[in-house]
Amino acid sequence: MTAHVGKVLVTGAGSGIGAGIASVLASRGWRVAVNDLDTDLAQALAARIGGIAIAGDVGTHAADIVTRAAQKLEGLTGLVNNAGIHRRAPLASVTEAQLNDVYRVNLQAAILGSQAALAFFASGGAIVNTASIAAYTPQMQTGLYSAAKAGIVAFTAQAAVEWGPLNVRVNAVAPGMVRTAMAESVYADATLHAARVAMVPLRRIGTPEDIGNAVAFLLSADASYITGQTVIIDGGFTHTVIDHLPHPMIAAGNN
Ligand SMILES: NC(=O)c1ccc[n+]([C@@H]2O[C@H](COP(=O)([O-])OP(=O)(O)OC[C@H]3O[C@@H](n4cnc5c(N)ncnc54)[C@H](O)[C@@H]3O)[C@@H](O)[C@H]2O)c1
Image 1 (cartoon, rainbow, N blue to C red):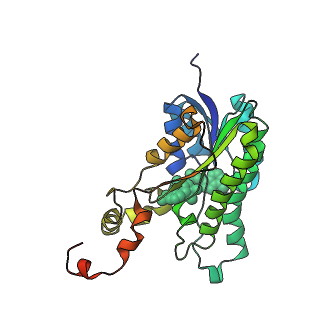
Image 2: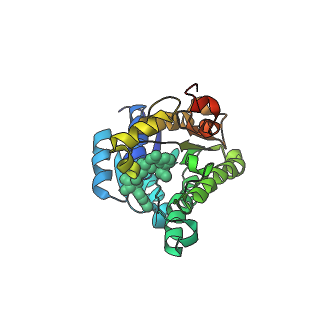
Image 3: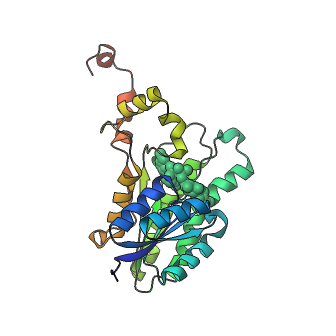
């Protein structure tokens, strides 16, 4: 039997970025538990990458999902808190139900899931949380998504300090624009797609595998002295803010 480099649960991994993360980890020798709300998606990906499926809602059952994964995998050395949702609404009219949904899935699940994972990290472990560039640069109409993702950045740093002595590292990735179902309506429109590509210094939209590669590094022994960090993976996009200012050179076509 092949020895695995570790045993990891990836939440929200039936599609999108989570599926990219789970696939990259499996290709690097991890034994992967694939969690998703959608049982069919979780089972299909688990079958494709030789992992196991753990269906369920991390917004309400995070600790239970981690426990079931650790039991089925017979141990756990890694956790990727990736599941996340948007609820479009301006802050002025965001409802308590929308607030609770966004908070529970994007932030509370990562905290309660990580707590549960600690009990299985027999001789240490590594956690990676999925934040977003929205943690640093809010966006109109995203309600409390930005605040929840900023909470993930702060939780990542806090947990790194508290759990470092237990040999548990905690880091995060903050994706920029990545083509997944979450924003497919934008990328399906060729004009909008091209306009977005033009705003990214690397001149392309990110892929789930781009994020998976960074997560694999942060979980690996190569990152053994890195903890509490959030790595922005956006093709350079968030460094372009000043370039959006109108300027005579740009008006003259000399940018
Ligand atoms: N796509 C982007 O551009 C982008 C950018 C920055 C951050 N992110 C973050 O990356 C993560 C993944 O985003 P995505 O674009 O792949 O989203 P997605 O909507 O394409 O896929 C998310 C997956 O998670 C599952 N899921 C949703 N809620 C769940 C829950 N409560 N429990 C278990 N599974 C659940 C869904 O069924 C789906 O398969 C999220 O945390 C998101 O906030 C995405």
